[in-house]
Length: 193
Image (cartoon, rainbow, N blue to C red; front, side, top):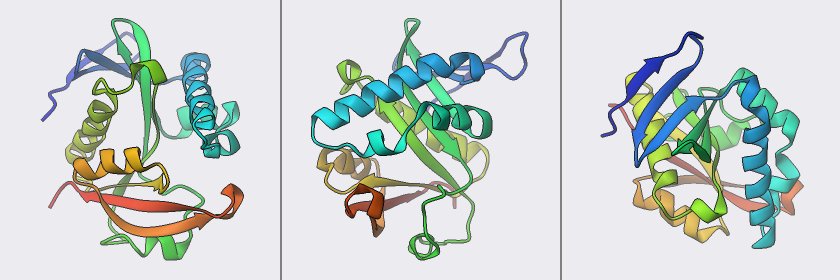
């Protein structure tokens, strides 16, 4: 279990959390847009270079700005350097169809939806993404939200295994017409009873 140290600054909308692994986490605000977009776009380029261009087609600077305004976009720092990000929302992503949502264990139950989990390529395999997922789970537990849900491109086998090792199960599958009908897995983990 991660223990959170919450420190409030003079701006009460800004919180800094220490989440383990030497990471400090802040909730992104409009002043963080440039660095959040730099991280997402760098990860998008990296994915494209390994043959997966789905983030190129989906994420834009405007979308990152909207995530900061309307969702919970968090930025993870190690020794003052941005290393990763994750976005949490209690609303499902807009591209889920009703039949996609029906594949979840309890489709009508409240859930925390994880999107834009990203770690700078040269910082991967250091436990950062795992700590960000632990943070998402602890956030859900603190709010008594029973499920964590997200989707993952099926062909990204290493990432699918990353999630499975953390107890996430595949509950459904859909194809994305905007991504050459690439199959995606709907994944879920029950956090609270």
